[in-house]
Amino acid sequence: MILFKTQADLSHYLSPLLAMGRSTGFVPTMGALHQGHLSLIAESVARTEITVCSIFVNPTQFNDPADFEKYPSTIEHDIRLLVEAGCHILFLPSVSEIYPNGTGREKKFNLGTLDSMLEGSHRPGHFQGVCQVVYRLLEIVKPGFLFLGRKDLQQCMVIQRLINISGWDIHTVLVPIVREPGGLAMSSRNSRLSVQHKQQAVAISRALMYLQRSIEPGSLDKIIKTAEMMILAAGFDKIDYIVIASSETLEILTEWNGQTSVTGLVAAFIGGIRLIDNMPLGPHEK
Ligand code: AMP
Image (cartoon, rainbow, N blue to C red; front, side):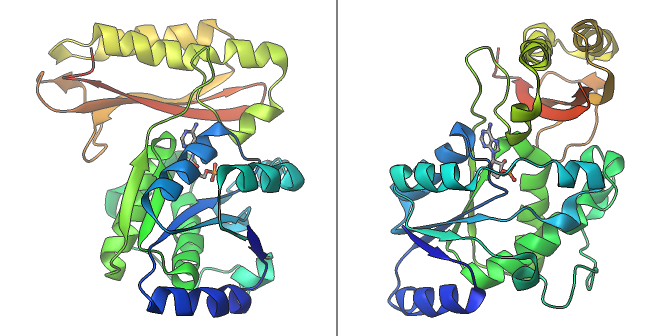
């Protein structure tokens, strides 16, 4: 694996390969890598000739400065995992390399309602920051394929929209959520949970599985209330949202017609750590 720290060096290396028509897959990450990230790398290695992974903890997507300060960093370990996974290139830029003109917002991305719903409403400015960094990274790496985790389903939709409005010819591949044996969705933030909180945190995936088992056409109120109780009873401090939404648009539903493809989505805090998860619920998931 080759490690690049500057855009100039990475572009200099990649340009002739792209000109020769070599296919490139890109996996953007914020590091503290786990099996979820590695499943994206594996998918890229299987489908493309050159896999580029980036590790960059993007300051502009954190609405909570303390969350940014405490974001885990395990770079030596990450490098070992990437080498073992067959990743070809690691791009490890500094903040000034990504934002030579500073981290101010130079551009507003038109994300429609995606910007202000669910994650957007609880983390103001988050998706503008995500677009700011992804726009920059895609301009630098110029991949043919972009690998994204369904764990961040709304983010996948935001990035797809960014690609559409930018007119880029980039094929996105969405990779299923990788979970711990107990069901907890893997996340870099899980490393900040105590052993006890980690055990309690499985309540989110259990609540989503309960929704999957219980969903019926008609009102969704009752099962959402029960799922909410399951999460709070397990010791979560606060739920930002627990909703059932259209899998296509993320429009929040109060009733289900039994036919629309729907997904359950949760964001909740335990031990001061904010966790998110989602699961397809129907009609074919039971
Ligand atoms: P992050 O480092 O959290 O920004 O994540 C980088 C990429 O890995 C994003 O596309 C995430 O959706 C994806 N990812 C994170 N956790 C998981 C997981 N448990 N399963 C699958 N993909 C994941």
